[in-house]
Length: 379
Ligand code: UD1
Ligand code: UDP
Image (cartoon, protein in one colour):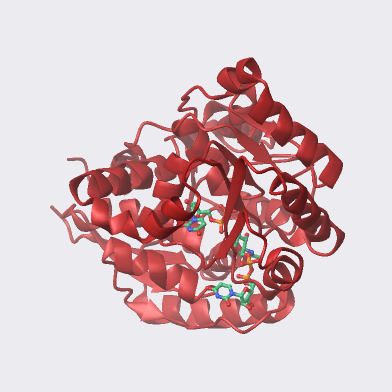
């Protein structure tokens, strides 16, 4: 066998870390590869929560996060920093995931060095460059550059084909978020204390129907966040309901939610949860209300109805399967949809069916085999 291929795996935010730690583990376990992990640390605390749980120590940490960072400042720093790491590591290939600034800049810096780029979670498209913003353009840039496109579903593979990507470069692998979810669920089952930090809240809200909330989308800042806060205030006015809301560390989210919701009896505004605790919250919640991408994938896998506070989604699979519904960011609509699910058992039952359109938990293994094939190293 020839020398193991050096794969530079780049990520920077919480969801990228969640979706890439299973792939890094699979690469590490395979003698055909030497993965080198570089984190931009576009996120800091929320990234470190995942690194710790996954036991992943990066080889390079650019520590780039700045409070309330701008897209241009962040992107400039990413291009320079990631380029320097590539020059030092001299990898055979570069791997990025999803559609963050880190992923886009990583792909671009690799392209400037004519390094092949492998894109995990390729082909998600909403068709609107401002929803989600700036992710729709980030992933199109990566899609233009990538050598291999690991599409989670047939829907995302079809979107790439419609953009004239060579079908031979597209592989439907599932989404590695399901690998991560399986991994964390098994860990919690073996050691429930891992998610014990929610016990006090469970006691406080005993007998109430839990709604889990997350929100962070840039295109929802301002009026959208105000409307979301107003909706939560009205939902939590019901005595039978409790809202558990781990608040994203972005100051544009925190300012609004703290100002509008702090101190309400039926609302717990809490710090971002580590992955085992968040997986546990997914289990406790009767309904998830979110603008997150990852939660739209995890909730259907667990049969939790998910109301998506966006105008469009690049993940139509959950909507098609019936577990997800787009509700936008108008308070009136959000409240109506939540009350409908709370009060109409049949409507709830119709949404609360487990579907796994996003994968079977074997995505990381598939990606590693496809990569081995690509570099000419068969098992
Ligand atoms: C980023 C991604 C988005 C992804 C989201 C996942 C871009 C442009 N955006 O959005 O695609 O869906 O992550 O959560 O790449 N902050 C902290 N600590 C942290 C993380 C963030 O304090 O651990 C604060 C900082 O003030 C930071 C701000 O949040 O400047 C924004 O972080 P940034 O990564 O730029 O954007 P997100 O909105 O988190
Ligand atoms: N998540 C977490 N703790 C939290 C909220 C979310 O671990 O307090 C996880 C969640 O399970 C999912 C991912 O973070 O896997 C989603 O991240 P986020 O919503 O920040 O980003 P997006 O998926 O929208 O890019």
